[in-house]
Amino acid sequence: MAINTALHFGLLTLSIAGIATCQNNTSGLSKQVFAAIDSRNDQLRTVNREIWENPETAMEEVHAHEVLTSFLEDQGFTVTRSAFNLSTAFKAVYSNGEGRSVSFNAEYDALPGIGHACGHNLIATSSVAAAVGVKEALENQGVTGTVVVLGTPAEESIGGKIKMLDAGAYENLDCSIMAHPGNNAYGAWSRTLASWRANVTWTGKASHAALAPWQGQNALDGFVAAYQMTGLYRQQLMTTDRIHHIIKNTDNLVTNVIPDRVESEWGVRGTNRARQAVVIDQLNSIVEGSASGTNTTVFLTKVQDYWDQNPSFQLAKTYYNYLIEYFDPSKDESTSEFSISTPEQEYEDGGSPSASSDQGNVSWFLPSIQVGFPIGGTAPNHNAGFTKVAGTDFAHDQAITVSKVLALTALEVLQNATYAEAMKKEWEEMIAALQF
Ligand SMILES: *[C@@H]1O[C@H](CO)[C@@H](O)[C@H](O)[C@H]1NC(C)=O
Ligand SMILES: *[C@@H]1O[C@H](CO)[C@@H](O)[C@H](O)[C@H]1NC(C)=O
Ligand SMILES: *[C@@H]1O[C@H](CO)[C@@H](O)[C@H](O)[C@H]1NC(C)=O
Ligand SMILES: *[C@@H]1O[C@H](CO)[C@@H](O)[C@H](O)[C@H]1NC(C)=O
Ligand SMILES: *[C@@H]1O[C@H](CO)[C@@H](O)[C@H](O)[C@H]1NC(C)=O
Ligand SMILES: *[C@@H]1O[C@H](CO)[C@@H](O)[C@H](O)[C@H]1NC(C)=O
Ligand SMILES: *[C@@H]1O[C@H](CO)[C@@H](O)[C@H](O)[C@H]1NC(C)=O
Ligand SMILES: [Zn+2]
Ligand SMILES: [Zn+2]
Image 1 (cartoon, rainbow, N blue to C red):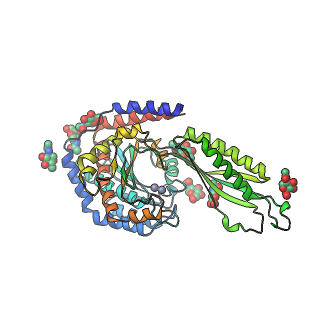
Image 2: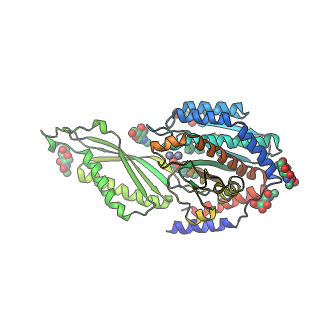
Image 3: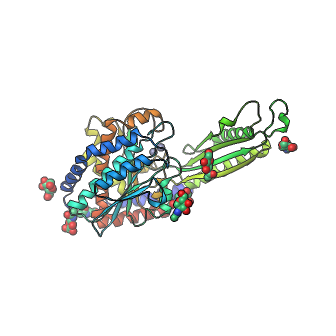
């Protein structure tokens, strides 16, 4: 509750900052930026298709890494492959000297068994396209500064961005920008839930299930007891809390042996880390109780800790304003049925956090946005139906449109010092109000 109040206070101060207006002649600059992106559309389509057709899971994204780094090198970026001691991470830079630095995150990991069911092929495509647009402004349109693409692996598991943050990848950058596809809504100020995952393993003692069951200690009972207690606990949860579990070593379970080992993974999400900590505390008690109540032993090891995402309100407003100015979705029949809220409405709704991302951690480190864009379909993210939609021409076109708006948003940061300072100040105030 205290945190909710703080969050609200922090954001109220944000709305004071003025709406970004056009730089010297943004319509002239935007034309050049859009043309630069459009002229590479065939290559961008190939990049997108190569990643989508060859799905690779977390830390195995070898082909995507190759396709993206080759493309960016061809485009004149200085590329570091396997950057930050991560084999499938990269950094690509174009700079014309002094000035500020903007960055785009490219994700490209798929999900086990169902391919690009989160559409990360489109994240990679929109980010490299946006970078190409910004590079055009730097190279040929008199804008000063640096554009960076960070290739960020393993969003769906260990969180490449967190390892990259620790390795200094986000030092000396003024902002971090990216986009994520979904079904049917545009979002500019999209928050995400804090996400924590742990390996939880019960061990007992195997024994013949008929001959000597009394000599066994049933690890499955440990898991089931905890699962049941979690089910009861759900009545006390808030609507924004999430708990999920899976059993991982089912191959070892057979009916005529008392199970001596059950490996599981538990996920806990909350609208912020303070709330999440309350739920995790209770789960620790549940897990301990389940072990003592079943005469088994349990170990819990944290495997993921994504913080809640708190984007820059100023960047979100700029993104939204440029989207409406150049590509108003309500004016195009292919996009008019999708929903769109103003950043002010999103803020009133608390950013509607639902999923989670390692971009959450990034958002605590520097001003950032992760905008949402619709690609249609009814199958949700992480369903094989979404994989199909993520491979369509329409989805590609949406990623390209979004990339243009991302590029203009980044150019505002590069071109306007007053804007960049206001963005930083607003973000610092928001983060200070969020600390607990
Ligand atoms: C801005 O640039 C566009 C395209 O280059 C040009 O047509 C327009 O006249 C310019 N506007 C101003 C106010 O200079
Ligand atoms: C790089 O990562 C490997 C493991 O993948 C680790 O053993 C090594 O210490 C790391 N090196 C640095 C410089 O962090
Ligand atoms: C915009 O105008 C300012 C001041 O007139 C100038 O310093 C800056 O270089 C211009 N930027 C571009 C992109 O032309
Ligand atoms: C736990 O299981 C072991 C092994 O079967 C047994 O020796 C012990 O008495 C059991 N403890 C309780 C409290 O049931
Ligand atoms: C969690 O369990 C998986 C196996 O299911 C293992 O690969 C991973 O290393 C474990 N993580 C930690 C932090 O123990
Ligand atoms: C991000 O995540 C790690 C844990 O994975 C955490 O320890 C760290 O403090 C988080 N926050 C930031 C801003 O990096
Ligand atoms: C620069 O940004 C400030 C703050 O957002 C804004 O008031 C001003 O109009 C912008 N200047 C230009 C030239 O766009
Ligand atoms: Zn996902
Ligand atoms: Zn995703």
